[in-house]
Length: 234
Picture 1 (cartoon, one colour):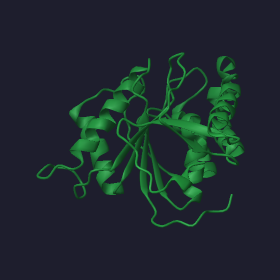
Picture 2 (tube, rainbow, N blue to C red; picture 1 turned 60 degrees about the vertical axis):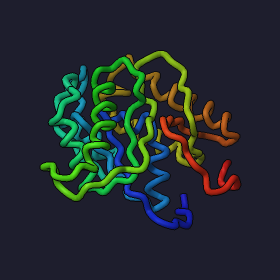
Picture 3 (spheres, rainbow, N blue to C red; picture 1 turned 120 degrees about the horizontal axis):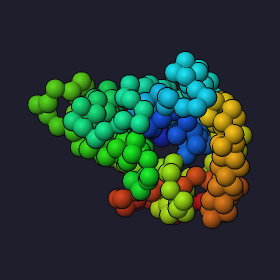
């Protein structure tokens, strides 16, 4: 895909509980943001292990391969899978990353979920957004308050997403699919998860149909979103 003219690049931080969450929820958007010239950093809270067919080394290799396909920057915050907790330590670690990356836009999991790591990550990011603006606090970098916090859908509930906006990712379907398939231990070796790609494809088409495009990804926001002009709508 050819990049579009860009007035001012955004510095974007996407926080994911585990490697593959960001790819599943917004892989097309990630690739599109990078192609549009934005500075996108994905921060995985954990390495995602243990899993039935994975190891830390396998997951690291899979994550690196997916990262190369999407073109994003990536880091891992080193928390323990299945034990992510909403704590001052976690808040400040994410707040420090917000400040050093100078993020003006944040993405976090949707706050309605069944996975404790996802719920904790969302609370951590929401509070870290506030902590990042504080003065006279021992955090790296200068204070900053990200203007936007968006929630993506990577939930473990059998619920229908109720987004406040959709991003057209037409043309990025295959790149998202390839990034997800990098996680061989999760979606190929694990027979229980082999159907995931089917519902990911179905969701792209469904939300695309709601926007009148071929493929779209859903997001929600608790704050009103302002448009500069109606002609920017799809």
